[in-house]
Amino acid sequence: MKKAVWGGCLLFFIFVIVGAGFQRHALACEILPLLDYSRLNGHVFIGADHKPASTENIEDLLQAASLRIERMYGEPHSRPRILIAGSVEAAERWGANDTATMHRLPWRTCIILGPEGENIDVLAHEWLHAEIQQRVGFWRFLREMPVWFDEGAALTVDYREPLLPENIALSDEEVSQVRSLVSGADFFSDNVLENYQAARLAVIPLINANTFYADLERIAAGENFSDVFSARSN
Image (cartoon, rainbow, N blue to C red; front, side, top):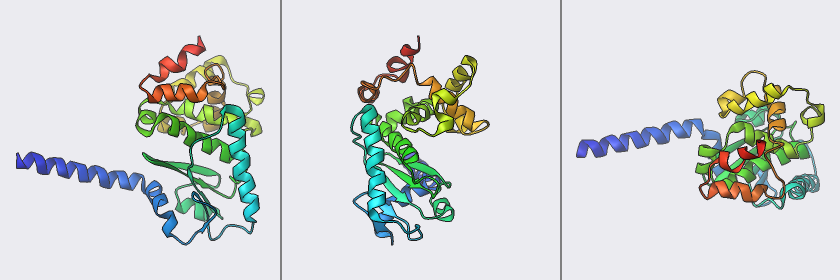
């Protein structure tokens, strides 16, 4: 009995250590309030090496991104922790690239904006990822939400020209194939731009803007992704 208990404890600690290694940047976001970063409000932080900019400009960006989501789907309820890094090097220290990355924890999402990501398209995109997790719940999100759908949905509030439906020339077969990319390892591999474009087109018949939040909450309540969304593709 004691061996079983010790074995269980050992497996638990291994899980925690390995998980902390893979999610170290997400966990680091939890101590942002303790670090030497300027704090715009309760959830937005500005890196020390951020280029000179007024607080008003950053506030305008946050408001514009929130408003874009609201106009499409309704007011976002999520309040992701946001770090606006001042350089590529600073973003990389937080596990991000020069544009943006979002880290997930069961109780919070954390958006790192790199120097190329300080615009409404990128912030609205990342914020909608956070909103989807907020509505579905972390564990249900991991279980039910395929990456292609999460990315395609985020692109509905991202108006960068190569990702607009009217600028995408992919065959029906190519769009259909993206639905097999359910994990990040699959999606963020070869032909990433094409995967994004295909995902953008793939969600068009699946998402009803008027019911999107309610549909996500159906998944939170226990329904399967395929039952809530995929039937609309028929």
